[in-house]
View (tube, helix red, strand yellow):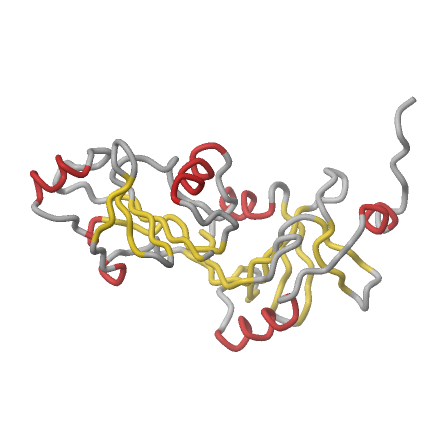
Amino acid sequence: MKVRIYQIDQDTHGVKFMDYDFTIERNGKIHPETYQEAFNADIDETDLEAIYTRFNTNHHPLFRGHSLSVSDVVVTDNGAFFVDSIGFKKIDFDVTKTHKPENLLKVVYVEPHRRAYEAEILNEYNALSKAVGGLLELVHIGSDSLIVCNEEGKLKGMDGNRRLDNGTTIIAGPFFVCGYNDGDFRSLTDEEVKKYLDRFGEPEDISRVEVEADMGFTFLPLK
């Protein structure tokens, strides 16, 4: 399910981390213009409590905020919900009035066992590293496009994700596709997003044996 999370980053009204009743008493309403988008992606969780647990204990690699807390807003297919001190309050929330960080890359994000989807990642090393779960490895897939994956994905035992080079090479762990220009990452164009969604859209069934074979050696069980 597509989930978006918004967190206050312009606390002009002194309501960050405050509950719904306090916020309404202070402001009269929720002000979306004080919120920044912290997450926008597809996840398995569909229940609000499950989403709350996920973003407090095991953050998604594309999450760019603090642990989900009181005063945050979660937007799902069922509407917008204010995270209250206990539970959630359904609210009117105009996401077009929120804002985003300036240094975002538009990419195609690809996870094992999932369909690829368009996403945005902060163009900062820590965020890029978090998106792939470790050290960055760059794989050129065109004159001006890159796959950015985990250099140690196979060594870490990450699941096989997609095959390249007519099936002769396997990428393990999550990766993203971005543009590349004069030594710098850049956002994909809309045409490129469509191209790579078509290329990596469907998940591939890749066994651990195939991943190990692509490493050039095999792990043996301890005796």
